[in-house]
Image 1 (tube, helix red, strand yellow):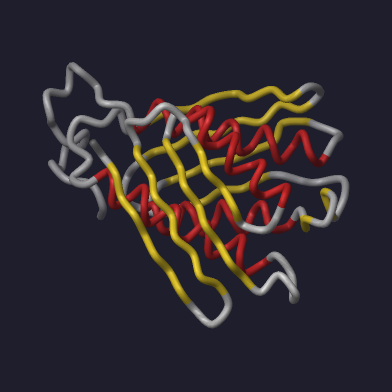
Image 2 (cartoon, helix red, strand yellow; image 1 turned 180 degrees about the vertical axis):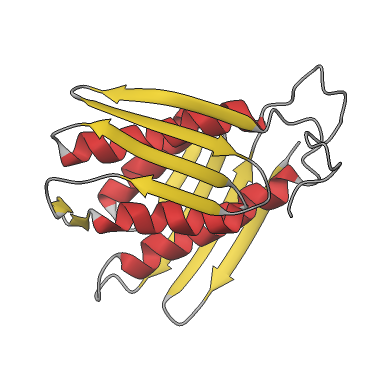
Length: 197
């Protein structure tokens, strides 16, 4: 089983994340941020990655540190669980609809962290959650997972739907990219023979 647990403690946050890449999408999420918990829950459900997140952060200041640091820890956990990356599919992309919204998410588990994020939100907040933190989370995740990640909302009017289409799109792309390719016979999917540089 490809699993990992990351514990990350700073003066701002105390976070523990556990992933099982070969799970069934079971989640146990508690960050203290309702909308963010919802996004992580659907990430687990649609990626079929079992995900446990326990986060205590300085929410009396704002949601920034908890959101970003959870992205860091989750990215590190996914990277650790992938190990040598032998046999993975590596590349995946999806167009994800959410009512009037359509987003495109494309991933390359390359070992080279890059984020291209072309998403505009019509509102500054979704409930109490700052919409600018969606990008912060994706940035933290991509940099620490070591993936090349392109996220673009092609159109959409509702900020909740836009955020949800991005997270669901990542979930489905991640599900396909981390899957073991039965034709790869344990090979690292790179002409260089390794991923990460």
